[in-house]
Amino acid sequence: MANQSLSFASKRIAVALTLVFGLSMVQVFGQVRVEENEVFYHVTGTSGSAILASVRARQLKAVGASHAIAVTRATIEPGLVQLERRNNRCHVVNAELVLKLDYTYPIWANSAEGNQQVLNAWQNFTAELANHEIRHAEIAVDMANKEYDLLRKTTTAVLTGGRCADLGPGHRTKVKRIRNQAHRKHLRFDHLEARPRSKLRKLQAVLAQAR
Image (cartoon, rainbow, N blue to C red; front, side, top):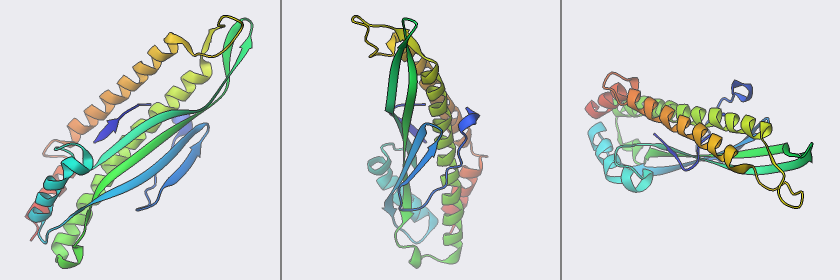
């Protein structure tokens, strides 16, 4: 599941998002800087059903939603925007965007107490859960690249006194359109993943039966 407080990305700045558990990562692609961070909430149990019950008891506080086991929160901030006056228009001559991706996952705190069947089922499920969140991150990166491309092409009117200090309402409208498109992509992807025949749901069912 993705939770966008701001949304965003062209294949010209493609990115493979590699997760390193417990670490923060900073990657730079063109002028879109991607900062990644992971946090975990503890779940317990010795059977798959007990672990999932522990997830349900903790997910609302940890993830912020009662239907999501993990979440990717994506925010985008302008790192640098420089405007220059040319031909009575303001042009963006330099720009950088910062895309922050914060992942929240469950971690099985007492995994040493579980048997091999439960451990295998948990590992398979959480690996696919990570793939699910990476897809949300890819959508966010794709939109960040689109927003960067839009930013570099933007020209605005010169303000009173010959100043260049604002990108204008037209730019904000286009950014909103890009972000709404990203939001719809996240919703469509979550809808597909929620189907009983999806790989994620099948692995969750296997985990629920593991003893």
